[in-house]
Amino acid sequence: MADQNMLEFFETELDDLQFSGDVNLNWDKQSRAIELEFTLNVAKSQDLAVEDQDGELNESDEISYEDAILFFDESKLDGFEYADNYLAVIPFSGRQGLNAQVARGLFNYLQDLLDDGEDQLAAFANDESEEETFILNWDDTVFQATVAQADAQLAKKYYAYPKY
Image 1 (cartoon, rainbow, N blue to C red):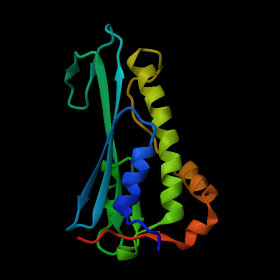
Image 2 (cartoon, one colour):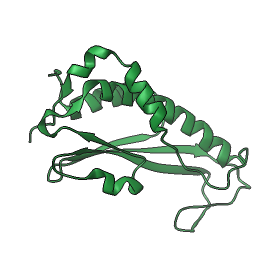
Image 3 (spheres, rainbow, N blue to C red):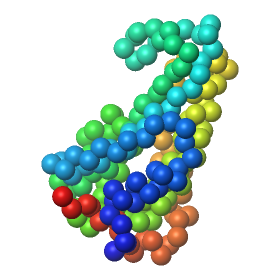
Image 4 (spheres, rainbow, N blue to C red):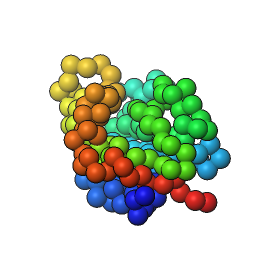
């Protein structure tokens, strides 16, 4: 067992994350799920008209993009049913929790993903992108490779699901 539970590990890693946006953890005890929500914020070009997902015109000087990762207890919930609502869904093993190698790989990948996401959103917001819409893309192949590159000793450890 690792010394920290899942929430403690997440909080420690989030404190170390080099990210100018907002990050929140939401713990649904009843469903045994944890959401890691994050918001990217960038200044936008004044002459660029941007509609949000509801079709409303954004008239501010800033664009915000929100997304989340769902961690779910695979013995209690089929989180893959909700995959369309999240950037990624990651199962964990009941009270045993999240494998430490997966957790380490996740935060290594997340740092790169958020850095690239901020750059891509800034390019989009300043009309330097050919894309008509912005969406952050999770690359599971890169994520799995990042997990595999994490310390192999971590494969035997877990960050336990937090106790109430």
